[in-house]
Structures are given as structure tokens and as C-alpha cells.
Amino acid sequence: MAQPGAKEYDIPRCEPLDDSDEAVVTTALVNEFGFKARKILDNHPVNEARRRKSMVPANFVLMRDAGTSKPHVQGFQAKWGLDPLMIADLPAELGIGRLLGMDVGELEPGTRLGDYRKRAELVLDSVGKYGFVYVHLKGPDEPGHDGLYDLKRERIEEIDKGFFSVLSKSPRLKDLVVAITCDHSTPVEDKGHSDDPVPLLVLGGKVKPDGSARFTEKDAARGSLGTRGRGMMLLERLKQAAS
Image (cartoon, rainbow, N blue to C red; front, side, top):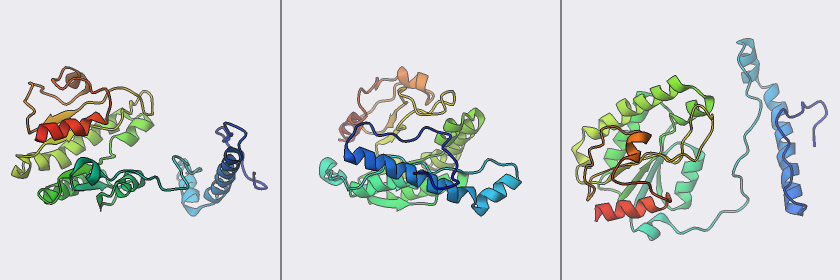
């Protein structure tokens, strides 16, 4: 599938897992698209400028979780009885929100204090308008993938200063249930996702303080909520806390 003169992959080619026509055609399309994208990127003005600055060029397009049909799933409101809002900036989260019939508050990507402040202000503005508000903050994940410990710590500190500091000062969340967690761990040692348990903090409703002083993996492991065996159990637990 390589175009004449195209560079070979320096990562493994996509190979079919079986002999079905679907698998063979899919892998051929992925490989062809990969070679063509690489050829275009190699001569792109942005990459030429990066090379002049001795920077690594962007030389590939990540293809992940692609599909050819829209899945049919039960809407969020129908399943949980809550009018939902999603606040996010990445295509995957935005797509999930729209698929579930959620209203979507799409913001420009950003990890500065002002970016987090905008998200916090949107949350506060949504109180009373929605029964459920989901906020996705991407900041610490990318430094985790790059193995940059100090930058990951800075991103977490920026979320504290720009996002949670705004929420914690507002009386609007007083009578609400607030949950803080993450969808996966990204250890800097691994430079990728892991199956380590992630911390969960729940405030308000019927949840009683257990004396935890810090929001860390070690402190959460000793918390009164214990370890939830399946992530899908969280929303049911939050509804119980709110009722």
C-alpha cells in the first residue's frame, strides 16, 4: 500500500487478526491512510519550521476507536432521570456526550488558570439548570504520557488554583453532591494508562466526612467509601447520596 518514495513505518504495520474480508480491508485502509498522511505531514510547512528549530516533527496521525456506524445506546436522561450537561473540549468526550443526548458545553482546549476558571464558572452557571453536570479536565494526562513528573504536578496544581478554588468559594454547591475522580491513571513511569485504582472524593448529600485530609491514591484507599469494583457503580452511589 506504500506510495512511491514514502518512508516505511517505524512502528509495526496494522495486521488483520483473522482472514475475514472486513479485517483485511480495514487493515489495508489503515496502512494506506497512514502512509499518505505521513507523506503529507513530512512536507508540511509546520514541520519544516519545527526542523529548523531542531524540534521533532509531527509525523503520524493516531487512528484509534474508529467506527463506521453510530451505536444505539440508552440516553443519559432516560437511564438516570437527570437532565445532563457535559463540559469538555476533546472530540471523544464531546461525541460520547452527544451520543447520550447530553447538552454539550464545548470550550476551547486549554490548561491555563484562566481556562480552568472558565470551566468552573460554567459549572456554577449551570447549577439549577441541570440535574447532572459532567466536567472533563485533560491537563495532567498528557504530561503523564510524556513522563514529565514536574509538569504533571504543575497541571494538578493549576486545576486546584483555577478550577476548585472557584468552586470552593461559591455557596451554589452547598446543597449538591459533588464527585471528583478520573477515568484512568497515567503514571509517568509507564508513560501510558494503567489499571491502578483511581481516587474518588464525594462531598455533600448523605456522605459523611471520614477525616481524609488529602486527595491522593493512598488517602483514598483508606477512605470510608472503600474500593468500588466497577466504575458503572459510581452514578448509582451518587444518586443514593443525593436522595
